Image 1 (cartoon, rainbow, N blue to C red):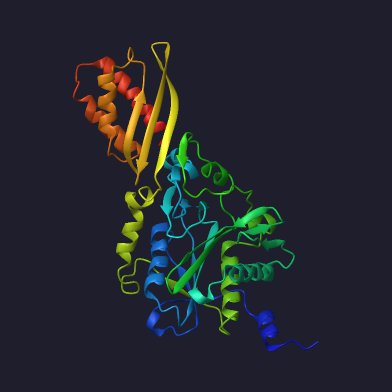
Image 2 (image 1 turned 45 degrees about the horizontal axis):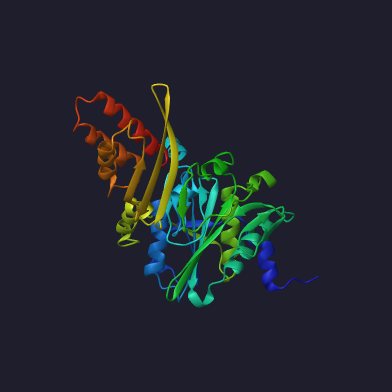
Length: 373
């Protein structure tokens, strides 16, 4: 049987790709492949922003390959307190980032690959991109059971999610990015992506929990390096090019003028937490003090990540209304985060230097506040 020229190219195409340093002025291909040298989620998200804002995507499509150190990445319109276990993340040094696209929350580490497909808006097609990834995976393991869903996820063996999708559509350009679990920490994923915080009322976009599995569990040959090469190879076939991955450093201001500013913005508290849609916290709690259980209630409204209103209901025989009001009033306008709450309460305690009993009670309330943040 004779094979068509395209089929011959598919059979003979090498799995490995040549990698070179990039200088955009010399790159005229219609399909450009970039791979980041950085494992910083903020630097890699900044590259996405830069490509979206500055590259001429009417003339060429771009595939960006990147991996991150352990990080939880939430969607543009999500609430981190609803999406993940911030206490555990702080304890284990896991970062938090908010991307500019919508969609749900994902866990990144070096066992997870991120692909970003940039196109003109009129050529934006998420399903086509997912089918490209499937073809790449099957080029490595033809028997692999992987399918795309109507939600633009990739499922392994019909039930395990190995890839989630998000996108951003600009005026003339668009990008679609997806994850791919190769050898991520499968113990951490369900624990980190489970919020321990209750009593939060929010209209933020919720994530849809899913069973997950690593590709390496299905076939040990499906390493991150092999999969990235296979996807780059498949992407190149669309443009009749040899696989040629251009390595880029997101810190290179010569290559990406202004990118440092983009990264700084993505790192800020006001972006990561402050862009959370307005939400309310309604919480009942108990405090054990001198072998007596004290019942309390807390109602807060959080806007742009700052405490807009705060009402605590406590027995007046345990804490006077005046002292309760002083604590509430000190919290107004502050960031909804543990560090700031501890600082504010510590500052407030100095106004009553000799009242040990009040210090004890305010410290106990401070611990309750920190536990819900």
